[in-house]
Image (cartoon, rainbow, N blue to C red; front, side):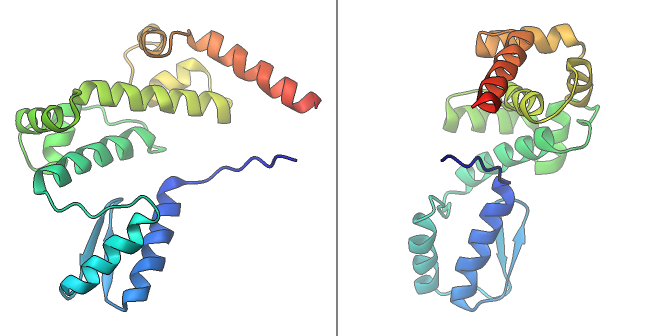
Length: 186
């Protein structure tokens, strides 16, 4: 027997962080998705223990400040795209520069240097993943999805979806419906 599950990765990660941090008996605050603020500086032994405990879950402490900023760029984009709110109606470059307090040029260069991809490609990938999720888990029309993700038109969304996945959104929806029907008939 198979049991399908759905989980919130953000909630899951926060629970793991809390569980591991409570073992250290230190005062902390989890800031956003990937930052821990300590009230009192942990000892190097405590940091090493955290690194060891976190590694079991595939979580690592980032020591390199530039790499930490690249992670913040990714997290900011993920927060933006996966928010239940309609995407902001400002350019992504302005949004990132305002949120991260660096020029967009610096952020874009740093991102490309460490990931070998552009911020734009990362955003497109996240948006397409969100489109898939909204298609699979919701009863959203492409028009609603396109509006929520701030596409200029359904045609723009469809072109980007096809370019990224090789399928049109309609073909993707048909495949999902067929799979659900097949699964339900079993």
